[in-house]
Structure formats: C-alpha cells, structure tokens
Image 1 (tube, rainbow, N blue to C red):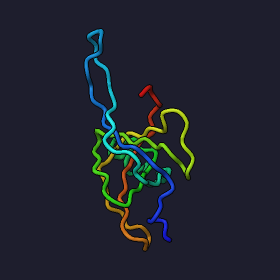
Image 2: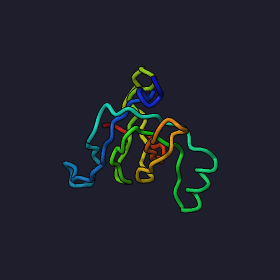
Image 3: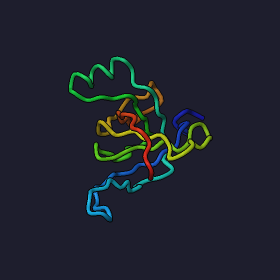
Image 4: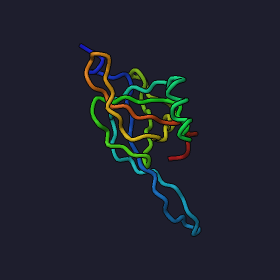
Length: 124
C-alpha cells in the first residue's frame, strides 16, 4: 500500500459568496462544494514562500491531492480530519492562492498541488 492509496488528511472544499444580510449589509457565506476529499497538507518550504512573495502572493502551506480537485482562487480548503482524528471546531481553513498544479510525487505518481494561506476560523 503506497501513500497515494490513503492520504493522511481529509478536507472539504468550499466557495465563499457574498450575500445580503438581514440588515441590508453584505455577508460572506461559505457554500460547501465537495466533502470527504483525501489530501495531505504540509507547510510551504522557504523557497516556495519566497517564490510566491516575489509575485506579491502570501502562502503558508501546500495541499496535495491524488486527483485534480478543480479549485480556483475563489475556493477555500477546510481540513476536517488529520490522521483519522477529527479537527475540532470548524476545522482549519486555507484560502486557495494558486490553481491546481500537477506535481511529480517522487516516483509515487502524479499528485496535484494547491498552494494556500491559513486564514482565521469563522462561524460556518
């Protein structure tokens, strides 16, 4: 059994849309598009952080998938489970900072990488 058969984390993918609140103001509402997606979230390397900073983009992590999750910069990835343990609260929310990038998985096959940035939890 290889790592690609069972990635250690599980996430949901959501898109935040702006709607009118009851008082007439604007309110961001996350809409879940996919759930139960296996992934592997890791800290971004110093060179990846520097490469993105040169383009004016702040990243803190990379998230790998075994197939293209179909995300854009309008999506958020919410880590809901780590190594079989449910993440408390609303989960760990990462704003997608890049579209999906095919990435060679060190002889294990092709993984799909998304660069992200940690954002504070909010009521969901």
